[in-house]
Length: 279
Image (cartoon, rainbow, N blue to C red; front, side):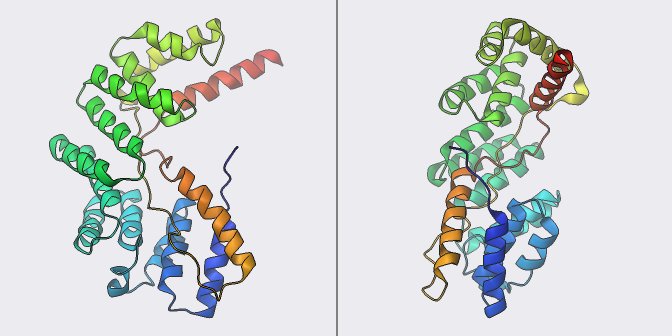
């Protein structure tokens, strides 16, 4: 079953709560998180800024959402500032450690990055997210075979995850495991199409400006809604929120790609080419 995103429904619900009570900081945090998840960092920043720091320290996802927004703007120093606050008050500990691990890896501090990933893995809701990020760290160090060995069981569990698939193929290509790449491609396309895709990937990966192609998993936050809504909310609002938060929980670790995934672009180009040929 395909999970749909009902961000509009959540946003309407949380705005309605704020209209009733402008000091409903829990609603402000959740509204900011939905806007961030929807790619609207301006609106996310506006609503999260309405929450005083002392209240932020009492709420789940507050400092984490601030860190997410700063990270998305590549303001890593500010993101680290918010991460430190989140750790200091004991909120969203494993999620912020994962985020900090990504920042450290992008800054080239691989050893410390791995340390934070390992610490996050202990308690993070989706362990596969951390395993993917550990593999990406190995790829950045040129340990492509090791990364492929880490990613293969993830792919076998998550065959329809385009991020894991792309990262596995890149690591297999760069470790020169070409037969494995061809076999993987032929699971979803004809032998001729797989050969064309393989040649395109091989060409792309010889271009230094296209690497790194791998993608980190950046869980933007823990489930946006973590507790039962108050009895004062209407039944309709509760149903809307429950349905949508279920979808967000299910997809929370399949999050925006940090670095470009060339495989997805290649697949779209191949699909467009095939459509032109048919026409």
